Each structure stands twice: as C-alpha cells, then as structure tokens.
Length: 100
Image 1 (tube, rainbow, N blue to C red):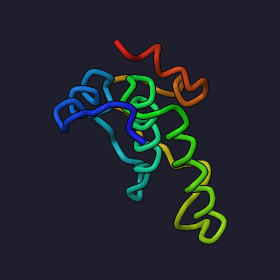
Image 2: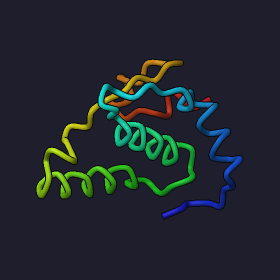
Image 3: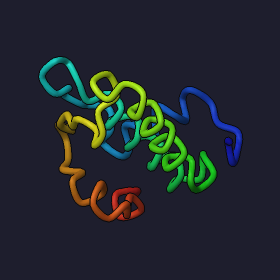
Image 4: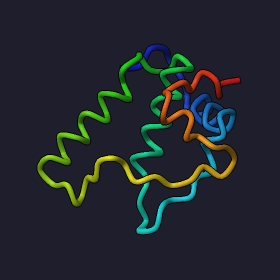
C-alpha cells in the first residue's frame, strides 16, 4: 500500500539516489527477487510504501516456495549491487543508513 503519491520519476530518483540502479544478476540469471526486496525496503524507508510491505512480499514468496521450492528459492539468490555493498542492509534492515 502506497504511503504517498509518487511518480515514475520519483521512483527513478529513489533508485539512483540509493545506488539501486546498477545491479548484476546472479548466474542463471537469478537474483531479481533479492533486488525487488531491496527496492521495497528502500521505498519503505523513504516513505513511498507503508512499513511491512517488503516483509509481505517475502512472506508471499515463502508461500510460493512451499509449493515450488525450485522455482522460488528461499533464501533469495543474491546478485550484486555494483555501486555499493548492501549486505549490511540485508542483515540489519537498516536501509535508512543508506538514504541520503
């Protein structure tokens, strides 16, 4: 659920301002759900989405994993953010440290 109105340009600026726009998928290619989770967390921290949205996404994927673990692996396969290291974010969920 969106917390405030935003435009595609706002979304692009959020991606660029938080170094989420340069991403290398894991071999396969895999890693898109990891990228989506990081983007949802950033949207929560910047006020574009209500808190808990990323957790809802992760729970939904976990449910899909129950029925098809090969197609929906948990934990998520990670690609690599090319401009910054987000492992701290994934471990602590403290994306606010990365928001300018």
